[in-house]
View 1 (cartoon, one colour):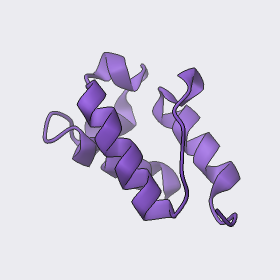
View 2 (cartoon, rainbow, N blue to C red):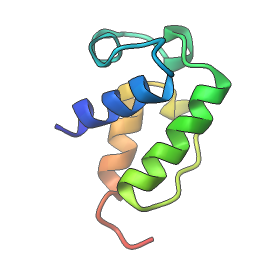
View 3 (tube, rainbow, N blue to C red):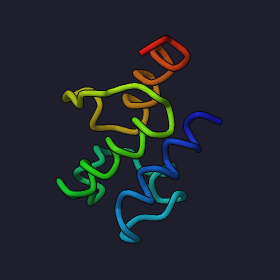
Length: 79
């Protein structure tokens, strides 16, 4: 469920360039999938709003699974 929720946020942040299904099916980085730097800014904002904590992107967070893994470790913790 978290994976689908984050994929939907990525699709939303792409401003229509990606669908949730494309993000879920991809086996590459979000950058290789086509998420732009502006898309990353939108994604960070969306994640911070949806989960209620700040996030800093690192190299390991450039894939859907890396991002989901990171969020699953921090979701529910006080900010």
